[in-house]
Image 1 (cartoon, helix red, strand yellow):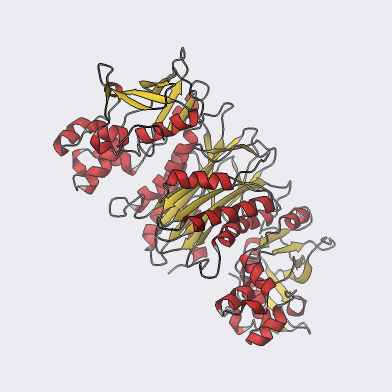
Image 2 (cartoon, helix red, strand yellow; image 1 turned 60 degrees about the horizontal axis):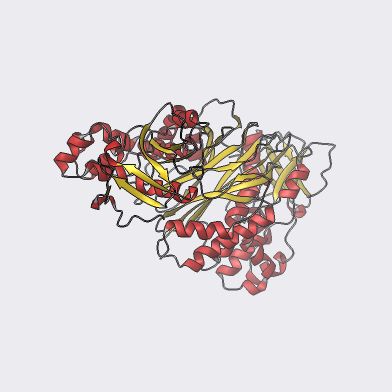
Length: 314
Length: 314
C-alpha cells in the first residue's frame, strides 16, 4: 500500500501541465496563481459515491473527468475562462492503486480539454469515495448571473436536452447499446465554456442545467424575481432520445425537462438581441412561476414523471 | 427536514459579511472575487469525521471554525493574506439542523477572525460528515515556499509546541480539566496569518506544523534538498505541557516533536538575518536527514512514542 505522499506524487506526475496561469503547482502549502486584471470566478462541486455516481456504471477515469468538468460548467455559466483547479479526494485506504490513478488520468484529460490545470489538492482517508473540485477562472467584464433576467427576455438553451438522463437510465437498465452517444454524454459531460464566453455581453442571465431544466429554470426565476413560459414543442431533444424513449416507454419531454446533468446553458436574452447560438424555448414573464405551453399556446401540466408535482415559483 | 436550498439559505444568512474582496457571494453558479494585482495563493483542506475529528470530542461549532482555520493556516505558511473561502459540506440527510447550523456559526467565527469570507460552497448528502474548505488569498511579493532553505540557515518555530496534541490526548482520556488551554488550542486552532506575513521577505522557507514537527520538517528537508539538526533543549514547550505530561506519564518532547496540529510556522532564516518573531531550534545542514541533538550537542534518538522509527530523509 502506498502512503499518502507516494499517492500525491503519483497524482502530480499524471497531472503535469504547463500553464502561464500557474506560478507554483502541486506540492507546497498552497498553489500560486498568476495575477490577473479580471475578477476571479470561483466554484466548488462534490461528487460522492452512492449519491452522485455508482462505480458499477462509471469508470474511475470517467469519474475524474466528470469531477473537473462539472465544476468547470459552473464557470461556463458565468462566462468565465477556467484557469486552475484544486482537487480534494477522500478515498478508502484499500482502494486499488490502478483505480486511484485512473481518477488522476481522468482529471488530466479534463484539465487538457478545458485548459484548467490542477494546481493543488488534498488526499484524505474515508470509507466512501468522494472528489471535491474547486475551480478558479477569469470572469468576463460583465459576468453572467442568475439574477439579470427581465420580463420579455427570450429564454434560450444551448445544445440538446435529455441525453445524459437517458444515458444513465439505459446504463441502469443494462441497455446502454440503445443510445451509445447518450451514455457517453452522461459519462463524459461537456462543459459549455466557449458558449458561455460567447454569451457574456449578450445574455441577461444564465445557469447551467445540472439538476434538470425545470429546477434550474426555477433558480433563474427566483434569482431574477419573475416567471417563465416554456414552449414544449421548441425543446431541442437529443438525437437518440425519441427512438430510445419509444423502446423504453419513457416520455422524452420528461427527460428533457427534469432529467438533469445535461450541463447545457439555459439563458435569457433581452428583447431585440439575438444570441449567436442556442435554441429559443420560451420567455420570461412578470408573473412568478413556470408555465409549460403546448403547440397551441395552451398551458399544460408537466409530465408526471418529471418530478414536478406543482408549478409555483420556488 | 429542510431541503438543500433551505439549508444553503440558512448558511448564507449565518455567513453574511461585507468584504471589498467579494463582488458576488453565495447563491449563484460561481462566486466573484475582486481583481488583485497580487498572485493568488490557493489551498484546500478536508476534515473527515472519524479520520480528522470525532464528534464526541469536537462540537459542530468548533468543527466549522477548525475547517476554515486549518485551510487558512496553509495560506499563512506562504505569507499570504486570506481573502475568500468556499466550503463543500457532505452531511448525512438526518443530521439535526442545530448541529448543521452550528457548523455555519463556527465558520462565521473563523471568517471574522481571519477576514476570510465564505463566498460560496456546495452541499451534498453522504453518510459521513466532512467539510472541504478552499481558501484564496493575496500572496506577498516573495511567497514563502518549502523549497527555499539553504545549508547554514537557522531553523525557527513560532509560538509553542505540543499543546494541541496534549489537549486531544486529555479529551480522549476524559481529563480535559488538567490543561484547559491545551484543549482549547486543539478545539480552536490558531492560524499564524500575521506571523506568516511578517516573515515573508525574511524567511527562506516555511511550512505550517500540521502533521507534527518532525514530519513537517521532513517536508522542508525534501523540498529544499538538505537536512536539519534540531536542538531538543531549545524546543518551546507549551505552558501546561510539562506538568500535565508528568501526571500522564507522557514525554513532553514526544508531543512537541510528533504531536501535530500545532499550526505554528516552522521556518528557516538565512545566516545574518534575524526574524522579528519565533524561537531558534536548530539549523539546516547539507547532509540529508533529520538529527536531534541533546544539550551537549550529541545526536540522540527520537522519543520512542514520537512515531519516528528511523531518521532518514523522506
